[in-house]
Length: 228
Image 1 (spheres, rainbow, N blue to C red):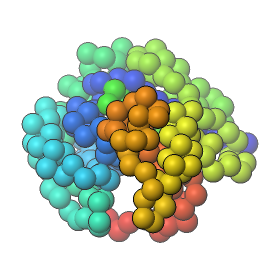
Image 2: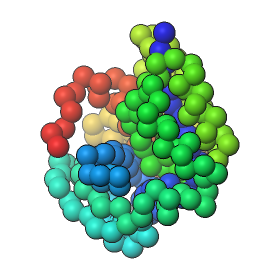
Image 3: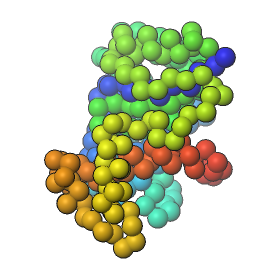
Image 4: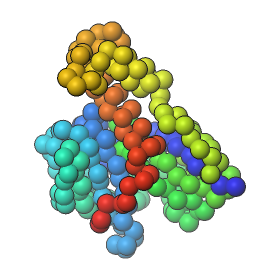
């Protein structure tokens, strides 16, 4: 029986980490296009309001040679990026054996989602067996910092909200009980953040990430893929 895993790789040298750091309240997803020779192109899907900040970060990023805004829908934008660095230049100083990293591409696994974090990547993938998952986990534990968030057998139903952190769950519940999601709103970010003892911007980020996680677990799997 196969496995489905979500895990964090804490490595600031991974592509686009510096870009995601500039827009902490946005969600940045990454796809790799391997049909362009040894150095794949990147496709970034960004949801959030900080378009100018994100595009400035792209322009200034040391690992992005060029970028193009391909399309947008409401607060979601899709970019095609040309990387400025090859694999060895990007990660060579941080990875003991690049051949071991390249070997992950041929493992019996499919990484279906990469979310860029401020300190690395969050990946969700399917693994044909435990050995395939252990290959990823062992590599990243040896070369960076690896944190497992969820590991289930494929075919198992996962209750909505299973992937939420305790802080995200608390923020959603507090905002809901305060009437933040009602129309019209009965509470502000500022009042809820005061109750939680965090800043309004931190609460906004927490709610956005929680909502993104819930959409991923419920509605998103039923959507057809966006056309390339």
